[in-house]
Length: 70
Picture 1 (cartoon, one colour):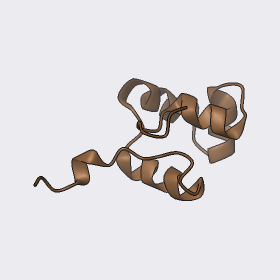
Picture 2 (tube, rainbow, N blue to C red):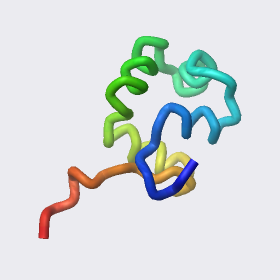
Picture 3 (cartoon, rainbow, N blue to C red):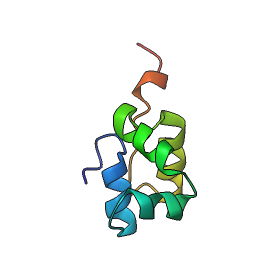
């Protein structure tokens, strides 16, 4: 789990010490369909930002699309 990449489902499973998507869904109160969607399309940046806050920066959100171009 690298800190310089976006947060993925696998990062969350590792962070929480879980075994699979179902356990993750139970831990963060999401249904299996939502976890599957995150696997296909990635975790939305807004949710990644929440996880960054919850983990006190141990996981880093990919907010690059929200950073103004120079």
